Length: 146
Image 1: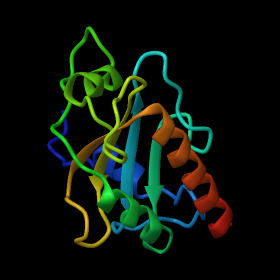
Image 2: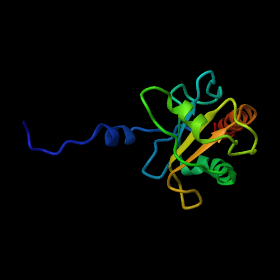
Image 3: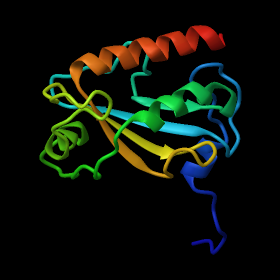
């Protein structure tokens, strides 16, 4: 066994990230959001299949403004018996954006921020109607930056 310190796969992968919208290479300054659909819910069409968004500072301003208007809630439970998306259903009855009832749950985890406007880590939940609006917002953002 070697006693050398090895670079973690996470650090290596972070060095190769690109912006979801403009495809520029990302540095340490990025906004990172992960989406978790509950059972029976699909990701918005404009979101990559893995549910992850990594956004450069230039593309993040409108997304930061939107997330800043949402109401965050506690972290969802994680278990072997249920998906993370289903965990969001357990902790949030109200949509983080419109305040309406959440039957079709899409969990949104913010785990990397650009600037100090947003918390360093936050969890949000979107109802079915707001999921569609969020998908359209992301699609428009993609069109503006490409």
